[in-house]
Image (cartoon, rainbow, N blue to C red; front, top):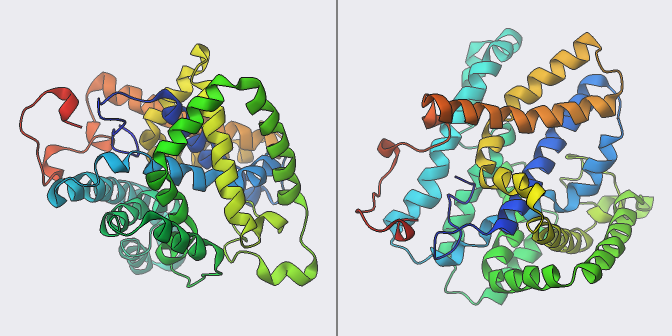
Length: 370
């Protein structure tokens, strides 16, 4: 049960480094929302802000790249099955968790603006993705678009997607803007999957060389992230640079943003390839395998922990509060998932029920049922 709907390879076996990469990505996503939420509420920044800023250029690019890796195995399935696995699967979880989130947020929204405004915001979320759920809203769009262009030469699609990332597209629509900013990474995962897997295999066999390259990358990446651009170049910064820990650095300039997204994704793939070989770190692969659990449910433990720590003053340092909230956002959904598995109650929260399917495979060997 992952954001990729469980598709790993033709043998229905998981690839541990891919799961480890997803685990790293989901931690970075929770860390970003946790840290920026704490800092907004506290009115100041902590040491975690620098970590979030460093990860910003590759956090979502890598998540999308990993999400496209196995698409080539299933892209030629019949349309009915493809839509069921790649559209309705995510639509079910989006509707469910959108409703759950609004159940918690609606009273506060209604107190400020009235129930009609709260209901309007809920309905609007079906055309403009809401809050943290935009990722699973956008994935089906990527799946359908990639299916439609699969006969077009890949270098043409990749070049066009890269151009969309470089151009200052800022329409105000989350779907349009994020599609232009992120599709190139998803398509790269799909189009260059064989090369990415070969790269992961090579770096596993060359640990020392990869470590040296990783250090060089981190230094160059950090310099580009934290060095502000001259005032004359400020107008060239990517239009979405005011969010998600942006620094106004060179990393947010066109072309450089794309290159850092790809280079950072390669760094995470390499790190994950090595982490997957370390037995005590296999919890990270488990977390990646269940990334949808964390992604869907982290908002509640994150918000609750932030409120408690800020109001009680149990922890004074904003950075430590951000770190604690991040841990709660990751661990809370895992605990919830464990309770659901143990009790058998609430499986619909993380598993799509039969009634929410339009294609059901006939009985066949497990390895063919992916």
